[in-house]
Image 1 (cartoon, rainbow, N blue to C red):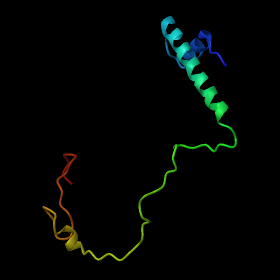
Image 2 (cartoon, one colour; image 1 turned 90 degrees about the vertical axis):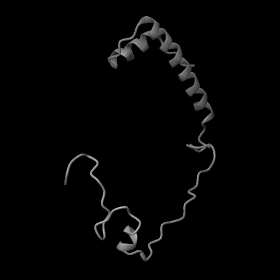
Image 3 (cartoon, rainbow, N blue to C red; image 1 turned 120 degrees about the vertical axis):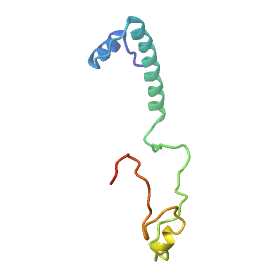
Image 4 (cartoon, rainbow, N blue to C red; image 1 turned 30 degrees about the vertical axis):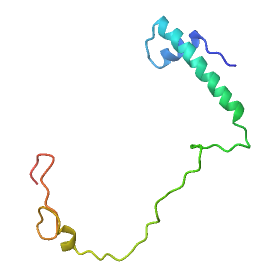
Length: 100
């Protein structure tokens, strides 16, 4: 198992321009050691005959394919339910507080 030392944690903190106390260095040394141990365990299990995955179960798209079709809705029909229109377009109030 790879061990990480307090000196390595202090060096990395210095490279990242992070000021750490001795208590924080000791705490991070322990935590980073545990993380490295977990990564080593996964590395031992991840063999070339096991394909990498992002999900434990196969994912599939549940949506239908987009199909280009004829538009049967006119502009007037599209805006017919709008609270305010100017004929063939929706009328909305400005949201940025600017008049256009």
